[in-house]
Length: 322
Figure: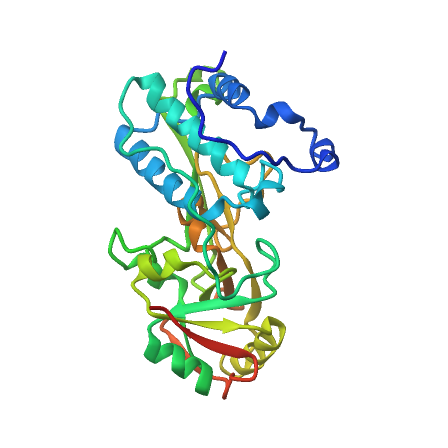
């Protein structure tokens, strides 16, 4: 029996064939079963109250941005799906219920459909990508192709509450100690208190340039930006960027992709875990598209570099946020 009222759920499910291909059925989309599955693996049991409150706040922000009709049809196991955020919100709120402590804020409600002057064809389609920033620099981006590329380590130097601050060289996730057994050489079991942290790190500092997969008004507000560049021909932009940076970073490996977001307390089963291309889902509302330059022979990105691509007004458009 369901113990906790759910939010008003979408009336749309992923296609039956999509559910079948993933070994799912309609019960995977029912709050009663979300609670049952959570009780079999209470993955937030050992999270301290302060972090649990922070998690719920992050979930509420992501919920308002990442739940929409086009996302209702995506299966629940993907962070691109509305259902993923309904599930995570319910199970996190259920942990508050099990502890008998109040929520830090009211549960989220879907916002009205955001009016977007530009939008990708579908989540993470990346047929259009966006570079947010201050108007002065975004004008230089379009008119002269001026771009600043920074070492990944730079993003760990910001203020704690700055939405750009993150450790891009190391990523962490936790597994409940109850589910892990550690023994000595003599086969004596060692008791585990709390959760076990697993970390992955990059071998070196690399250069990165961060854009976004979609137009999102919340990003302007969170970052206090007033403009963005709409890159309407991403393939051409990539070509020009790669050609120019090769002159300054010869032999460096160039790569780009949308970021994969993960729940650090309940990563997806068999999910690949990489420090460069994965981020904690607290940042998911940013819908990041990342460019990376990885040094050869264990080199290092030491300080920012500036590149100039020339005018990009044939493939880009400047948007000013009011």
